[in-house]
Amino acid sequence: LNELEQRLANKDLEEIDTEFRVWITSEPQGEFPIGLLQMSIKITNEAPVGMKAGMKRSYAWITQDTLDIVPRNEWRTLLWVLCHCHSVVQERRKFGAIGWTVPYEFNQSDLNACVMF
Image: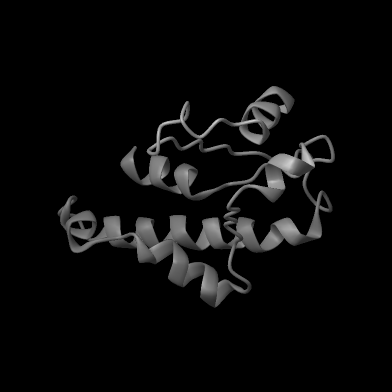
């Protein structure tokens, strides 16, 4: 990352394509180069606050096709349970490791994988 920061800071505009983009994902840490942060556009995705907001966010990506993919009535109930558990785990993260033996962030991609399985 330090090398990337130096290359971007010393850029020669004729050498860099106008369509050049770099996407970097990172956990918060003190070792991330400050200069790279300052010249970047930062996007964060925080979990919603509260169970009601969590359930809305969990259901936001569900379409009618997702509901109709399985013709059994139990499918909708199972989908609700998955979204509810996802919201509970997301809400529980703010308490840290209290009550959990291993911290694990059950994120949106995990919920998607559970629904697809």
